Image (cartoon, rainbow, N blue to C red):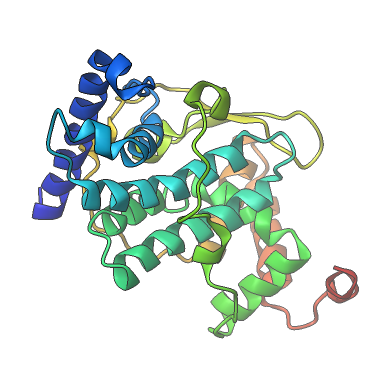
Length: 286
């Protein structure tokens, strides 16, 4: 465990202790602090917001490491946005890929440009347990089958081109986040899988064509609290390769004959590798 891992665990423990203290002094503070829920670690975002809002009153009872709490709040604001996106029944699977990429990049930005001591750890964890996992190929594959996705994969992973995109951090409201009641804010989806180790098997609860309501693990792995996240090393992920491997695994699960699988994978390679964009008209319309 590195020094940064210890620091993340310490600040998380710090806000949990403050939360418990605030709930004891609720009448003096004039508001009820959200309670830490181990199975819904994202509630820690709401605790951070509460502490920042009522820091003057809370400081009468205890020391507050407000700078690091704000650093943690910024990281959790990004993860909170991802949760609300995954929660929506209007979110397409291909959109999940885009938002995960944005979330990972935004956390990297906080680490490199804002000297946020927790963002790098959380960025690596988010990558390793989403796009970097076996299940990550599904999101990659879904994005590859969109006009923008095919073009992006062709340019980035075939030609190695630099794709000009707006900074990912601009997609997240870091400085002006509205404080809301956690019960109203987060309803049914948990992103605990970001920080879980174990099986990456999933079942998809489809509610309409092209959309996903919920992703539920079929095998329950050990549950980890936010304080247990560690800065495990991450390897660069080629999302074209990940999409292809996932496509192959799907075909194998349906017991498609080997030669047919080979032919389908060859067609998929041609589809991505070809500079003749079959979606060119669709790209113009978009």
